[in-house]
Length: 94
Ligand code: SF4
Ligand code: SF4
Figure 1 (spheres, rainbow, N blue to C red):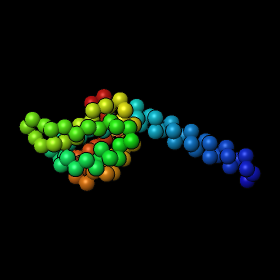
Figure 2: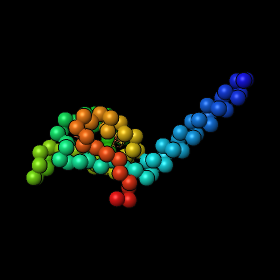
Figure 3: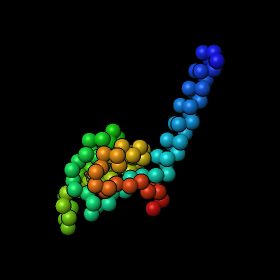
Figure 4: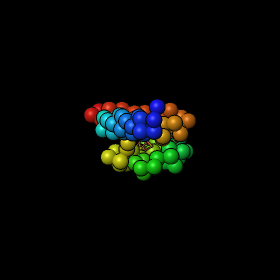
């Protein structure tokens, strides 16, 4: 296998992964399950796109909301960080 074949393979892989990432970001978005959220802020620290924000609920304690849905890329970093099963991916159309 020569160098050009390897480079072409890597480029193709990057393009394919980028396609699926963009498709997921277009179709999916984070949803917060308010009752499970403890306000620990772990997800806020993980979100590189600043899509989440902490609020003080009127009827419940501090919890996270998806303040900027347009910024969410559905990367799941926040879901991995959350230890309380308070985040899930849902269809954007919901
Ligand atoms: S990591 Fe989970 S429990 Fe903690 S603030 Fe975020 S959603 Fe709430
Ligand atoms: S899925 Fe990614 S971009 Fe969306 S809120 Fe979570 S960490 Fe931020």
